Picture (cartoon, rainbow, N blue to C red):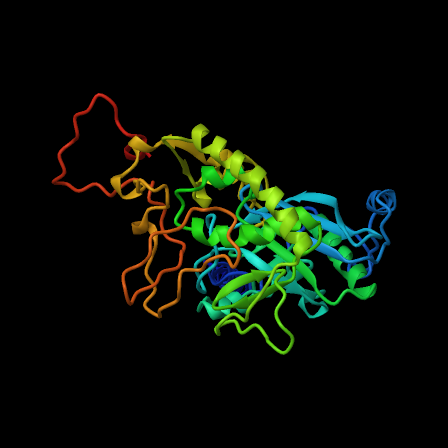
Length: 423
């Protein structure tokens, strides 16, 4: 028979577990105790200087220690990059980290609780730094931004943080987070007002865009690609505005006019030098995209679930079973795969014009418009929604997952079972 102390201890343990899982379901809300498996032993994590190897890299590239930075995230590749300004104000990459964990699938965050990690352009200020996070250290992504709010998207407490555990956030190891935090702290100390965070589903190359052309999020990703291209051409974070519920990059507006996220866009123009550079860039991209279309002709990319990604690191997770916070999610590139388009459900078939299937777009009862690029970089356009309705891509169950079986369903007889039925 348990003693009073033992029963109390059991109740406390049960309560702690309930609170833990409740926090996990709610998303990144700064309530999870940081995992201790890799926590650096430093006297002051907030003031800890960058390590010698990064200082040497900064000096090698001719950068000032406190010059501005920019952060880029690529979900599918599982990478977080830190770029830093050189004396000519062009940015160069200083370091690249493997993201330990991100939740959900490729695609933007749309609503609270969907477990999606944000995609888009987010300005980070000193206000977004959290030195007292229970995830060791954290930087709030600033989601929702102007674009998200204009399109009715919701969510809160979306972070870049330590502890290697994520429910809508981008989670790093504590050792990585110590360095990322130091980069931002030094840049703010040098006078930078806002650090631009660019969060992408993948590196937006011609081949990757062609590989993902059947995704329900493809049209949204084309809007992000405009900003991606501007940075690739200029190596400077683009100036980002929002009007008519869409992103606008590096556009010059007449004096006295302004950008209203939900209002009409003012007359805008692209700086001539940038237009020339983009023309050359887009010519090369179009040629590469046409080549990639031939490579992926008749193919469709299977975007893996979070559980499938975690299965890649199951052994590593088991070895850290005593650390509830340790939850790496694995590589979407390694867990995903190309399938023959003939072996997938009819719902995933693509119209002859090459656009993403319209039935993969979820309609929005609030009337949010299909987000479109202010300056398009490809000629592909999505089919228009029916009059009086509009649509935005939203996270949803993967259409390549197996259809539920019923007791009345007779087994199919075919020489070859489609992969999606075996899944």
